Image (tube, rainbow, N blue to C red; front, side, top):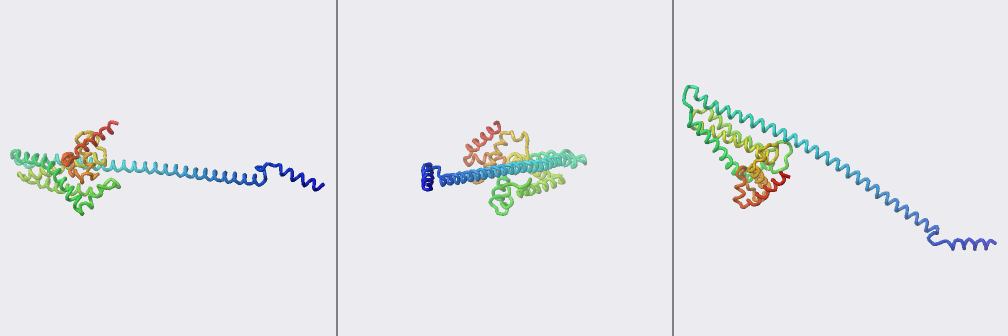
Length: 283
């Protein structure tokens, strides 16, 4: 009877399909558990990656907002400095012109027309002469000279803050202008008128350079409708080519920069860049 029961048990086991054997079920459960573990691990990693990506994007947006706010503050600070300096210098120049001639006429002498003509002629000459000097100084003193480049290189690097080491050249150019104006103011002669006009010309060039170069080209502060003047746009694009160093640093000047580029055969590229700028502005 025991033998019969044993045979019956063996018979029952033998008729079970192979896939339903206990070992097969255990292996299947183990494999399923491993798959679930892998899926869970992948889901956790994906979640971590998504959270990290979201955190990085939030940090980037925060940093971008901070940079924009800092740039806005820098532009406001530099704009205020530029406006105050320009307004103050212009007011002083007008007053100086008036008082120079009226002061020397206080004893009843006639209006010094020759001195006045020399003053206004040298004012114009000072502006043109400064463009020529700036072209020469920019290349020879600021780029080719190691000492000059040590300061000027800050202008070819990313600026941190509203000012840069290169700004010292603005002060350096202002000193002879002030000296010429002062000498010409107190000297009632033709030479005094010439020096006074030369000082005014250098001063006027400096104001123009600050608004076009610093404001319009490098956007250190907004310049308003000046930025819409076609020729000044062309000067701005020409100066950007200087920073690209594509033509060996040309142009070195500011207001005659387009002519310098035309002289080295870069007129077509300048025209193309100006057209692209015009298209972006309209768009």
